[in-house]
Image (tube, rainbow, N blue to C red; front, side, top):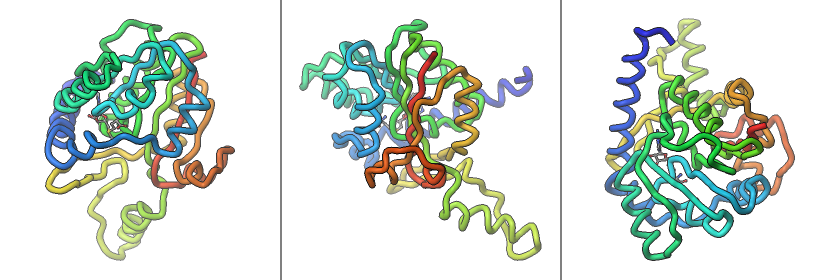
Length: 257
Ligand SMILES: C[S@@+](CC[C@H](N)C(=O)[O-])C[C@H]1O[C@@H](n2cnc3c(N)ncnc32)[C@H](O)[C@@H]1O
Protein backbone atom coordinates (compact mmCIF):
# COMPACT_ATOMS: atom_id res chain seq x y z
CA UNK A 1 0.00 0.00 0.00
CA UNK A 2 1.34 3.45 -0.86
CA UNK A 3 1.58 6.17 1.78
CA UNK A 4 -1.06 8.24 -0.06
CA UNK A 5 -3.66 5.42 0.06
CA UNK A 6 -3.34 4.95 3.82
CA UNK A 7 -5.47 7.95 4.89
CA UNK A 8 -8.13 6.96 2.34
CA UNK A 9 -8.33 3.44 3.80
CA UNK A 10 -8.50 4.95 7.30
CA UNK A 11 -11.46 7.13 6.29
CA UNK A 12 -13.30 4.20 4.66
CA UNK A 13 -12.70 2.17 7.81
CA UNK A 14 -13.82 4.96 10.14
CA UNK A 15 -17.04 5.45 8.15
CA UNK A 16 -17.70 1.72 8.17
CA UNK A 17 -17.18 1.52 11.98
CA UNK A 18 -19.74 4.28 12.54
CA UNK A 19 -22.13 2.57 10.13
CA UNK A 20 -21.85 -0.72 12.06
CA UNK A 21 -22.37 0.99 15.39
CA UNK A 22 -25.55 2.64 14.05
CA UNK A 23 -26.78 -0.57 12.39
CA UNK A 24 -26.12 -3.15 15.11
CA UNK A 25 -26.17 -0.95 18.21
CA UNK A 26 -29.84 0.01 18.41
CA UNK A 27 -33.46 -0.73 17.51
CA UNK A 28 -34.74 -3.81 15.76
CA UNK A 29 -31.30 -5.18 14.87
CA UNK A 30 -29.98 -5.01 18.43
CA UNK A 31 -33.19 -6.65 19.68
CA UNK A 32 -32.95 -9.42 17.13
CA UNK A 33 -29.33 -10.18 18.08
CA UNK A 34 -30.21 -10.02 21.77
CA UNK A 35 -32.78 -12.80 21.26
CA UNK A 36 -30.54 -15.00 19.08
CA UNK A 37 -29.80 -18.27 20.79
CA UNK A 38 -29.31 -21.03 18.21
CA UNK A 39 -26.56 -22.42 16.05
CA UNK A 40 -27.27 -22.68 12.33
CA UNK A 41 -27.08 -26.20 10.86
CA UNK A 42 -23.74 -25.51 9.20
CA UNK A 43 -22.29 -23.94 12.35
CA UNK A 44 -23.20 -26.96 14.48
CA UNK A 45 -21.55 -29.32 11.98
CA UNK A 46 -18.38 -27.30 11.34
CA UNK A 47 -17.77 -26.37 15.00
CA UNK A 48 -18.23 -29.96 16.10
CA UNK A 49 -16.00 -31.37 13.39
CA UNK A 50 -13.14 -28.83 13.34
CA UNK A 51 -12.91 -26.98 16.66
CA UNK A 52 -10.75 -28.56 19.35
CA UNK A 53 -12.27 -29.41 22.72
CA UNK A 54 -10.64 -27.43 25.52
CA UNK A 55 -8.13 -24.62 25.19
CA UNK A 56 -8.76 -20.97 24.38
CA UNK A 57 -11.22 -19.53 21.89
CA UNK A 58 -11.27 -15.98 20.52
CA UNK A 59 -14.74 -15.04 19.22
CA UNK A 60 -14.20 -12.10 16.84
CA UNK A 61 -17.20 -9.85 16.09
CA UNK A 62 -19.13 -11.80 18.72
CA UNK A 63 -22.17 -9.50 18.64
CA UNK A 64 -24.28 -10.20 21.72
CA UNK A 65 -22.32 -13.40 22.34
CA UNK A 66 -24.57 -15.99 20.67
CA UNK A 67 -21.74 -18.33 19.61
CA UNK A 68 -19.58 -17.65 22.68
CA UNK A 69 -22.36 -18.81 25.01
CA UNK A 70 -23.19 -21.82 22.86
CA UNK A 71 -19.49 -22.84 22.82
CA UNK A 72 -18.87 -22.10 26.51
CA UNK A 73 -18.88 -25.78 27.50
CA UNK A 74 -16.46 -26.74 24.76
CA UNK A 75 -13.56 -24.40 25.65
CA UNK A 76 -11.69 -23.75 28.91
CA UNK A 77 -11.50 -20.01 28.26
CA UNK A 78 -13.25 -17.65 25.86
CA UNK A 79 -12.33 -14.09 24.94
CA UNK A 80 -14.95 -12.38 22.79
CA UNK A 81 -15.17 -8.89 21.36
CA UNK A 82 -17.15 -6.69 19.03
CA UNK A 83 -16.78 -3.20 17.63
CA UNK A 84 -20.31 -2.24 18.80
CA UNK A 85 -20.32 -1.37 22.54
CA UNK A 86 -24.10 -1.85 22.90
CA UNK A 87 -23.83 -5.47 21.79
CA UNK A 88 -21.05 -6.11 24.30
CA UNK A 89 -23.22 -4.60 27.02
CA UNK A 90 -25.98 -7.14 26.24
CA UNK A 91 -23.41 -9.97 26.19
CA UNK A 92 -21.97 -8.95 29.58
CA UNK A 93 -25.42 -8.89 31.17
CA UNK A 94 -26.16 -12.35 29.86
CA UNK A 95 -22.74 -13.55 31.04
CA UNK A 96 -23.48 -12.31 34.57
CA UNK A 97 -26.88 -14.08 34.54
CA UNK A 98 -25.46 -17.36 33.22
CA UNK A 99 -22.16 -17.10 35.17
CA UNK A 100 -20.26 -18.27 32.09
CA UNK A 101 -17.18 -16.12 32.82
CA UNK A 102 -16.57 -15.21 29.19
CA UNK A 103 -14.26 -12.23 28.81
CA UNK A 104 -16.28 -9.78 26.66
CA UNK A 105 -14.68 -6.54 25.47
CA UNK A 106 -15.00 -3.86 22.80
CA UNK A 107 -12.36 -4.10 20.06
CA UNK A 108 -11.59 -3.92 16.36
CA UNK A 109 -10.80 -7.08 14.38
CA UNK A 110 -8.34 -5.22 12.18
CA UNK A 111 -6.05 -4.54 15.18
CA UNK A 112 -6.44 -7.51 17.53
CA UNK A 113 -5.51 -6.33 21.01
CA UNK A 114 -4.14 -9.75 22.06
CA UNK A 115 -0.83 -11.55 22.29
CA UNK A 116 0.54 -13.72 19.47
CA UNK A 117 -0.09 -17.52 19.51
CA UNK A 118 -2.50 -17.20 22.44
CA UNK A 119 -5.48 -19.11 20.97
CA UNK A 120 -6.29 -22.70 20.01
CA UNK A 121 -9.28 -21.55 18.00
CA UNK A 122 -10.63 -18.33 16.47
CA UNK A 123 -14.15 -17.73 15.18
CA UNK A 124 -15.57 -14.86 13.10
CA UNK A 125 -19.19 -16.04 12.79
CA UNK A 126 -22.12 -15.17 10.60
CA UNK A 127 -20.35 -13.23 7.84
CA UNK A 128 -18.95 -10.59 10.21
CA UNK A 129 -15.82 -10.25 8.06
CA UNK A 130 -18.00 -8.95 5.22
CA UNK A 131 -18.95 -5.89 7.24
CA UNK A 132 -15.31 -4.83 6.74
CA UNK A 133 -15.47 -3.09 3.37
CA UNK A 134 -11.93 -2.08 2.72
CA UNK A 135 -10.06 -5.02 1.15
CA UNK A 136 -6.78 -4.23 2.89
CA UNK A 137 -8.57 -4.20 6.26
CA UNK A 138 -10.07 -7.63 5.51
CA UNK A 139 -6.56 -8.88 4.74
CA UNK A 140 -5.37 -7.39 8.03
CA UNK A 141 -8.03 -9.42 9.85
CA UNK A 142 -6.76 -12.65 8.28
CA UNK A 143 -3.13 -11.81 9.17
CA UNK A 144 -4.10 -10.82 12.69
CA UNK A 145 -6.04 -14.07 13.21
CA UNK A 146 -3.04 -16.00 11.87
CA UNK A 147 -0.78 -14.17 14.33
CA UNK A 148 -2.90 -14.87 17.43
CA UNK A 149 -3.45 -18.59 16.68
CA UNK A 150 -0.98 -21.15 17.96
CA UNK A 151 0.52 -23.53 15.44
CA UNK A 152 -2.15 -26.18 14.70
CA UNK A 153 -4.90 -23.76 15.78
CA UNK A 154 -8.14 -23.55 13.81
CA UNK A 155 -9.94 -20.52 12.35
CA UNK A 156 -13.60 -20.82 11.31
CA UNK A 157 -15.53 -18.06 9.57
CA UNK A 158 -18.30 -17.58 7.05
CA UNK A 159 -19.03 -15.33 4.08
CA UNK A 160 -21.71 -14.97 1.46
CA UNK A 161 -20.92 -15.49 -2.23
CA UNK A 162 -20.84 -12.94 -5.03
CA UNK A 163 -21.55 -15.82 -7.46
CA UNK A 164 -25.28 -16.53 -7.45
CA UNK A 165 -28.40 -16.18 -9.57
CA UNK A 166 -29.75 -13.24 -7.60
CA UNK A 167 -26.61 -11.16 -8.18
CA UNK A 168 -26.52 -12.26 -11.81
CA UNK A 169 -29.99 -10.70 -12.26
CA UNK A 170 -29.15 -7.64 -10.18
CA UNK A 171 -25.59 -6.84 -11.29
CA UNK A 172 -23.92 -9.00 -13.92
CA UNK A 173 -26.66 -9.23 -16.56
CA UNK A 174 -27.60 -5.48 -16.44
CA UNK A 175 -23.89 -4.61 -16.67
CA UNK A 176 -23.41 -6.88 -19.67
CA UNK A 177 -26.53 -5.51 -21.36
CA UNK A 178 -25.39 -1.92 -20.74
CA UNK A 179 -22.03 -2.77 -22.31
CA UNK A 180 -23.78 -3.83 -25.52
CA UNK A 181 -25.99 -0.76 -25.45
CA UNK A 182 -29.21 -2.22 -24.01
CA UNK A 183 -30.53 -0.47 -20.90
CA UNK A 184 -28.47 1.20 -18.20
CA UNK A 185 -26.42 -0.05 -15.30
CA UNK A 186 -25.92 2.02 -12.16
CA UNK A 187 -22.39 0.75 -11.64
CA UNK A 188 -23.34 -1.15 -8.46
CA UNK A 189 -21.38 -4.25 -7.59
CA UNK A 190 -21.98 -7.24 -5.29
CA UNK A 191 -18.70 -6.33 -3.67
CA UNK A 192 -20.62 -3.52 -1.97
CA UNK A 193 -24.31 -4.14 -1.30
CA UNK A 194 -26.58 -2.11 0.97
CA UNK A 195 -28.59 -4.12 3.52
CA UNK A 196 -31.66 -2.66 5.19
CA UNK A 197 -33.54 -3.76 8.28
CA UNK A 198 -36.43 -1.51 9.28
CA UNK A 199 -34.96 1.98 9.00
CA UNK A 200 -31.41 0.76 9.70
CA UNK A 201 -28.91 0.43 6.87
CA UNK A 202 -25.34 -0.65 6.35
CA UNK A 203 -23.08 -1.59 3.49
CA UNK A 204 -21.98 -5.15 3.09
CA UNK A 205 -19.27 -6.81 1.05
CA UNK A 206 -19.97 -10.17 -0.61
CA UNK A 207 -17.02 -12.41 -1.17
CA UNK A 208 -15.59 -14.15 -4.20
CA UNK A 209 -14.92 -17.56 -2.60
CA UNK A 210 -12.14 -18.43 -5.07
CA UNK A 211 -10.29 -15.20 -4.23
CA UNK A 212 -10.84 -15.79 -0.50
CA UNK A 213 -9.35 -19.29 -0.69
CA UNK A 214 -6.31 -17.90 -2.53
CA UNK A 215 -5.94 -15.15 0.08
CA UNK A 216 -6.11 -17.68 2.92
CA UNK A 217 -3.28 -19.64 1.29
CA UNK A 218 -1.23 -16.43 0.85
CA UNK A 219 -1.76 -15.61 4.53
CA UNK A 220 -0.31 -19.02 5.39
CA UNK A 221 -3.49 -20.95 6.27
CA UNK A 222 -4.24 -24.49 5.20
CA UNK A 223 -7.90 -24.79 4.14
CA UNK A 224 -9.39 -27.82 5.91
CA UNK A 225 -12.97 -27.46 4.77
CA UNK A 226 -15.30 -25.37 2.62
CA UNK A 227 -19.04 -25.85 2.23
CA UNK A 228 -22.30 -23.91 2.11
CA UNK A 229 -25.18 -23.67 4.56
CA UNK A 230 -27.48 -24.80 1.72
CA UNK A 231 -25.57 -28.06 1.31
CA UNK A 232 -25.04 -28.61 5.02
CA UNK A 233 -28.75 -27.99 5.60
CA UNK A 234 -29.42 -30.89 3.21
CA UNK A 235 -26.92 -33.10 5.04
CA UNK A 236 -24.37 -32.86 2.17
CA UNK A 237 -21.15 -32.65 4.13
CA UNK A 238 -18.74 -33.66 1.33
CA UNK A 239 -16.96 -31.04 -0.76
CA UNK A 240 -18.54 -29.84 -4.00
CA UNK A 241 -17.90 -27.12 -6.58
CA UNK A 242 -21.61 -26.24 -6.32
CA UNK A 243 -21.02 -24.83 -2.82
CA UNK A 244 -19.22 -21.84 -4.40
CA UNK A 245 -22.44 -20.76 -6.11
CA UNK A 246 -24.83 -20.77 -3.16
CA UNK A 247 -25.75 -17.32 -2.00
CA UNK A 248 -25.78 -17.68 1.75
CA UNK A 249 -23.21 -18.65 4.16
CA UNK A 250 -20.04 -20.32 3.14
CA UNK A 251 -18.11 -22.03 5.89
CA UNK A 252 -14.34 -21.98 5.87
CA UNK A 253 -12.35 -24.03 8.39
CA UNK A 254 -8.60 -23.30 8.23
CA UNK A 255 -5.56 -24.40 10.15
CA UNK A 256 -2.37 -22.55 10.98
CA UNK A 257 0.41 -25.07 10.10
C1 LIG B 1 -23.63 -10.49 11.36
S1 LIG B 1 -23.08 -9.98 12.93
C2 LIG B 1 -22.74 -11.52 13.74
C3 LIG B 1 -22.64 -11.43 15.25
C4 LIG B 1 -22.24 -12.72 15.95
N1 LIG B 1 -20.92 -13.15 15.52
C5 LIG B 1 -23.24 -13.81 15.68
O1 LIG B 1 -22.89 -14.75 14.95
O2 LIG B 1 -24.35 -13.75 16.20
C6 LIG B 1 -21.45 -9.39 12.53
C7 LIG B 1 -20.76 -8.79 13.71
O3 LIG B 1 -19.43 -8.47 13.34
C8 LIG B 1 -19.09 -7.28 14.02
N2 LIG B 1 -17.95 -6.63 13.36
C9 LIG B 1 -17.90 -6.18 12.09
N3 LIG B 1 -16.70 -5.61 11.86
C10 LIG B 1 -15.99 -5.70 13.01
C11 LIG B 1 -14.69 -5.30 13.39
N4 LIG B 1 -13.87 -4.65 12.56
N5 LIG B 1 -14.27 -5.59 14.65
C12 LIG B 1 -15.08 -6.24 15.51
N6 LIG B 1 -16.34 -6.61 15.21
C13 LIG B 1 -16.79 -6.36 13.97
C14 LIG B 1 -20.37 -6.46 13.93
O4 LIG B 1 -20.38 -5.40 14.85
C15 LIG B 1 -21.42 -7.53 14.22
O5 LIG B 1 -21.71 -7.66 15.58
